[in-house]
Length: 401
Image 1 (cartoon, rainbow, N blue to C red):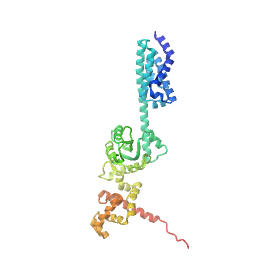
Image 2 (image 1 turned 180 degrees about the vertical axis):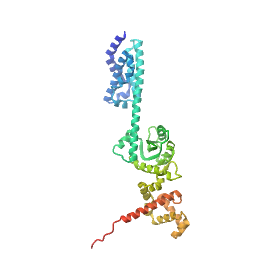
Image 3 (image 1 turned 135 degrees about the vertical axis):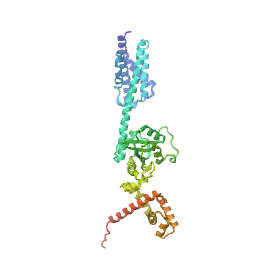
Image 4 (image 1 turned 60 degrees about the vertical axis):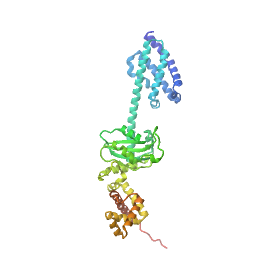
């Protein structure tokens, strides 16, 4: 049979080959049988386009560069998202097997042409999926940058949860934000691998010289869950493990918040701490934003001022005015027990007891130099706030009898 007669015969049986191929797909590929009808139809169109394209290629082998366009143009864009590359290669194999069975005995040239064509189609399919993956990666990167920017600016809207879900966020529960400098050679994949080993999920934002990581504990598929919450790493330990991924300079960890949609609160604290971290000469790396409360308050951060008053001044005031007075005196007297005792007319052991009670009530120890600065700043801010409340209080009016 010459080539012209072979082409005529192939065109005549192309419909029959397509029908047998669809039947073979249903019988041999479980994933095809459970697909929705519309997608099954799209897969059938791809198979039919592949057979038609082979006939055209057999007539003119120089048309090889157009194989991918000829075959995959018939498929809707959604098909690339629902059918994996592995499944596409299975589709190609079944189609080639059916075609080989139908053309058996028609000559070695035709069989060789089928093998060459199937090879080119396989490479073309890989190229299509690679391009789609690259486009998807670029889209994910832009979406991730948008989400991180929304968190940093606090301009979250009702679309933020859906955008987070589109990024494949596995995080659950508490979230914290880590801010530092971007290294000269930043390896995004290394950060994600490290986060996966720590059973956390991350959103990464590179903003010029500033690197932002939004961290959330995650249940990642294939990883064993801890038996108890105590076995989960704290955000301080997680930040210490991620610290090598940052460039030189300070790395600041914001406080944990309840959920990702509340991450802007942690981000504000982390950014404010990052801006003033240089004011603490011996700041550790990473350093918690709450350990920089005095510097943040001096820089005018309203969140730091509010935190100092609510965590230190008000609990002490509510517990005992003696604790506030003793703490004031102790700090004003250079943390001297004897000088404080003389000023308050009490025994030094009484001062020790009250300072111990201060530590139990608020969690900070006044005997340490760094914590003494935090406590003194809170007392100053609390006293200023109390004085302002007195001035703003409206005068009492006598009611007529």
